[in-house]
Every structure is written in C-alpha cells, then in structure tokens.
Image (cartoon, rainbow, N blue to C red; front, side, top):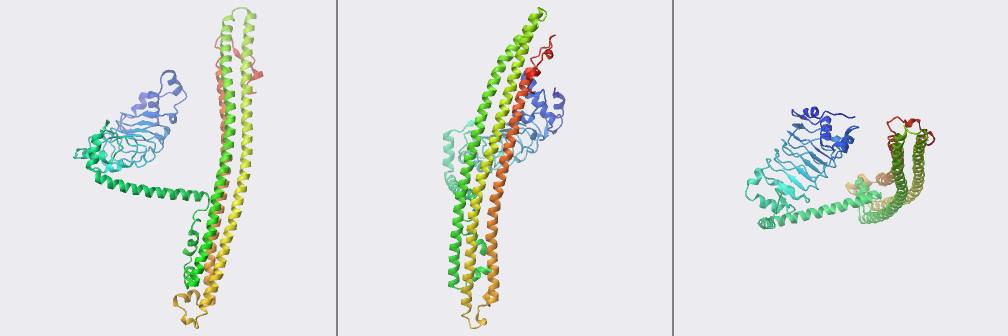
Length: 556
C-alpha cells in the first residue's frame, strides 16, 4: 500500500518554497477519486503522469518545479501563491488551462511550449507588459486584470490572436485613460466578451467608426503581410517538395550560376567578345535544359515513391486491422465465457461450502464439478492465448515479408532513378567539356588577331596573354565547374540512399516494437484473467489448492 501523510507533506509549503514531488502526490490523493475508486487510485503508488488536472493553491509556493512529472496535465491552477517567475512549464505540452492569478509575477515568459493553451489567467500580479505568448494561437480566454499595464500597445499585440474571445484588463492603469475601450473594441474585433460581459454591437460599431481610417490602413498593411507570408509559405512548401525529390534548385539556373560564382576568371573569359558571350549563353541554355529534365525526372520519381509508400501502408494497415478484428472477437468470446464460468464457479463453491458438513458423496460431487469448471476455464485460457499468440506470430511473419517486398521494390526504384540521374550529370559534364573547348577555340582565334602581345588588353594578359596562360586558366575553370557538378551529384546520391536506408531500418524497428508490445499485451491480459481466476478460491475450510489443475494451466 502506497501511504502518504497528506498533512505533513503539505506542511512543507507553509514557508515560501518550491513544489516538490511529495506535495504533488499529496494533492493528487486529496483531489483524486474517493472510496473504492480512490483506493485503486493510489494502492500501488500515484501515477503522476496520468493526472489531467491539479490545483496547487494557497500553499505559499515561491518557485515552480517538478511539474515535468505531470506531462499529460490539461488543467493547472497555481493561484494564490507567491510565485515571482513563470518557469519549468515546458513539458506540459497538453495544457489547455493555466491559472497563475494572485501571485507576484512581473514578466510573461516561458510559455512558448504551451501551444495548446486556451485559457490563461494572470489576474492580480505585477505584469507591466503583455508579451511572451506569441505561440499561443489557440488562446480563447485571457485575464490580465489588476496588473501594472500602463500603455495601450497590448491592444495591437492581441489583435493577432484570432481565437481570442474573452479578455479582462480591468484595474490596470491603461484602462483609466479615456477612449481605451473604444480602442480595444475597434482593434480587436474577434473579442466577444470584455470583463466576462458580452460586447454589444452598438459599442463595437461606435468604436470602429471612431478609428475607421486607422483600421483601414492597418488592414491594408496586414493584407500585404499576409500575402507575403502566403508567398513565402508557398515557396517553402515547394522547396520542401523539391528537397524530398532531391532536385532542389535544379528547376532554374541555380547550379549554372553556382559554377561561375566560384570562377571569376571563367566569367571574364565569357565576356571577351560577342562570340564568347554567345557561347556562354548557349552553354547556359543547354546546361539549364539538362538540369530541368533531371528536375522533372526527380518529381516523377518522388510521386512514384510516394504512391509505393501509400500502397505499402494500405496493405500493412489492412493486415493489422484484420488481425485486430480477429483478436477482438477472440477476447470478446473469452470475456463472455468468463462471465458465465465465473458465475457457475461461485455458485458451485457456495454450494460446496454449504454441503461440506453434509454427506461426503454430495460434497465430493460438488468438488468434482468445481474442478471441472476450473479446468474448463484454464483450458479456455490456454486455447485462446495460443490462438492470439499464433495470430500475432503469423502477422509478424507477414509484416516482415511485406517489408522485404517493399524494400526490394523501393530499392529498384531508387537505383533506377539514380542510374538515370547519373546519366544526366554525365550530360552536364559533357556540356561543360564542350563549352571549355569552344571557349578555348574562340579566345585563341581572338588572340591571333593581335600582332603583338603588347596590344592585348591589360585585364586579359593575366588570363590569356599566351597559349600556356590560357590553357592554365581554362583548366582551372573546367575543374571548378566539374567539382560543382560532382558535389551536386554526390549530394543527391547520398541523401537519397541515406533516406532509403533510414526508412527501411525504421520499418524494421517499428515492426519489432509493435510485435513485442502485442506479445506483452497478450501476456498481461491473460495474467490479469488468471489473477481474477485465482481470487475465486474460498477462504473457508475447503482448500482449492487440493484440486488438481496441473493438466490445463495457462503456463502449459
């Protein structure tokens, strides 16, 4: 039995202090279910991570701590304490309601992780600036009344919280200034309640009329921002798709520009005269066309992989669902038979106890009937357990086979794509070689027009003043371009291969985890039934340990 002295544990908080585990346990017991449900609640120890709601109030708490033990908490009240700092709440990611009223908090902070929060109560604190709740987009009710907020900046700040329906700023210095309510009602149109009273349509319209010009300008600016955000999101989504397809930045001339961004000499050579400029533009066109074809291939292959994964998951989920339906039917039959057999056993044991002082033959007959019922239930458990285990073994084997077929199919798709991709990268390298040869010929022809090296423009002498210098410059440029192409090819190959390896390994890990979990669940289920079964043994003179159950035990 898990025993806790609630009074002594709570006495820890009579002086300003910190939340401790013993305080949490005491509160959980005190606020938990009573009577039989309460005994079940704490007979084997408190499972703090299962709590959904707790009130830690009037305990003179100074520092918030140990709340990571309550990871599934939905509702938390820390009101009427002496808390000075909001902290150590990051683990409470499921929290929907937080009450920090009547404390000594000066700064709204450390609330970013609570993105499920719908109600935030900070009434009667020492807050001067409304901030630190940018991530709370689901916030519906905010109470910051009786604080030290002086300016109206919080009104525009709260305008972005589109789910906000109820606000209380009563008894703050800012509310004493003329026009505050008009400003609030006009610029936070999503509000329905202020100080928990409904805002009338006439008050709202009157406020809007007073500030309509500013509101129009504000709405225009907000529309521009939303458009920019939408475009940025569209760009991010597209980039994510291209990244998942391993062809990001191949749909335009990014790779081409990347080659020349590291090759200033090569760029200068391309601008010597009209012929070199035309050669450069033709090279750019050819190079970008090859990149675009590779880009389209990548998108097509991504669609194929996505469809293969969809079909694979469909088959896997169907297999799991079929097995679950069969298992559920078996369990339902067991529970139905259990109810009937247990009722019969109890009746027989009652009769056996009543007849144990009677005729020996009658007692022996009833004892034999009890033994028969016990054996019947044990046999039922034995067969049902074997059935469920057998179904799980079959499903596990099927999942392994399906995973292997999927691995082979996906590997073929990946290898085929990479083979085609290598072909495109070879074309890119070939186009680079052709361009290098073309530029070499054009510049050599250009230089032949000068009767003397002295007449060659000064800015070109160091690049192509003679054949040897030109050859060195072109070789360096060529190597830079090939390196850029090689790195991009290697990046694609490594990323795709790593994704494939990680994905397949994760499938194996998840299936093994599922299999172990199912076996444990089956074992725990039958252990529970066996424990219930053993509890039927009477405490009177007749000892059921004398009844031979060895022939049909679950362990067999």
